[in-house]
Length: 295
Image (cartoon, rainbow, N blue to C red; front, side, top):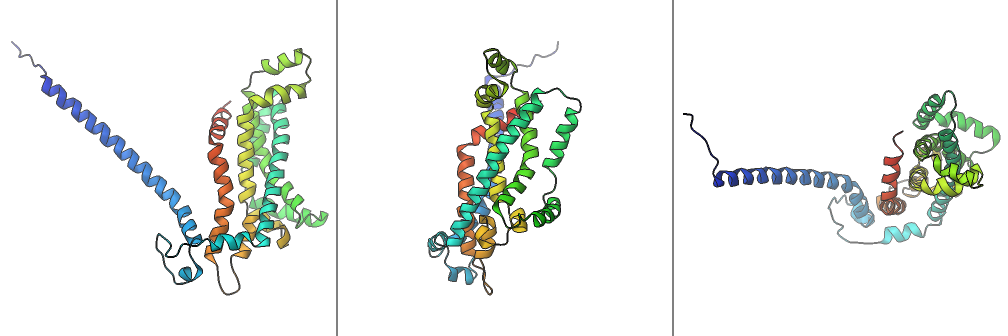
């Protein structure tokens, strides 16, 4: 007769402990990897902050400590009291805010129209919008520079707003078309039956439902305009019209020396608003991206 094998309670307990040990080791390894990734991601910003808190003599001496030897806020006070940088911050707010508002309005109307209209070649139009949204920025500079030179829009904040609008509109329209396409038609049809016009149904019914997608487009467009350097340096020459990223390049160095603490202080100042916006609105951004990415 074949011998029957039985599992003793002690054997079951040993197997369970081994499984728990492996599971704990697996989760521990995962958290260690996440911690390493977070530290590596945040370290450059940490280095910028501590450099901004160092004195100029300490930086000139070539010290590379992880903590400032003499903590000082002089770099921030000097930066904020410079009228040129304060003006540059205001210019960035004007340019980024105007572009975001203009992009959201036009992209919402275009996206809603494409989502609700059945036309031949619609997929071709959507593909063109996607390609235009990822078109290299540098490829736009030459033709637009020549055009601006002929019509007198060089070194003008309105011209810079229009350039940002040209670049951000295609991708915003593509994204909102996908987002509006997932909203049931019954919502605006019910509003139209009740006497609302198509635009009234869009403004009062569809737009409130599409807030996550619209908010995502607005935040991403604002971040692009706020952080841009290439387009601003291509079309602006007067320091009075500089945006914040362009002002950093010109205010952080002299003929004989580069003031890294001032540069990093300005970097921290222009980064904090974006970081706060993303942290406060991350749920809306994530919901907008996940809901509007699929058709």
